Image 1: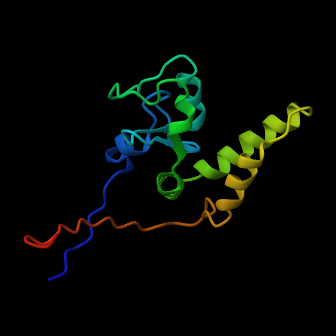
Image 2 (image 1 turned 90 degrees about the horizontal axis):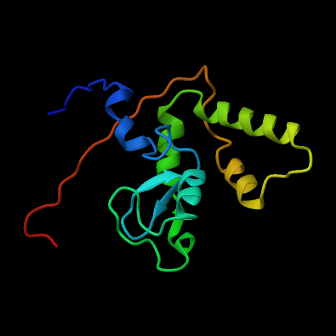
Length: 142
């Protein structure tokens, strides 16, 4: 028996796709490897300059060098860019304007490579349909 699709407002997903530090949608989503909490890259890097603990669960990120234990989270960033209309395009525009007004600064190699990863993002005129399904494991199977 097939279930009918149910439309869910994006506001019900916001808690899963927003940064707890800036309250905005993830930009350059970055995850702490010890606890798997995710933040915007710029938010968590700035936070970890003065702190060594996760801002959500207080787990120690790293005793002396917390930036060693954070990783880009392309999967979450892909979801955010697909779920939030025009977010990717607006971010590209903001970065372009920033570098035009700061001629002596150049995007890092990491930033340039991240931008190339999203060349398939939908244009603002395109629509999407996203289905999330939960598949529980069978009892007795390990």
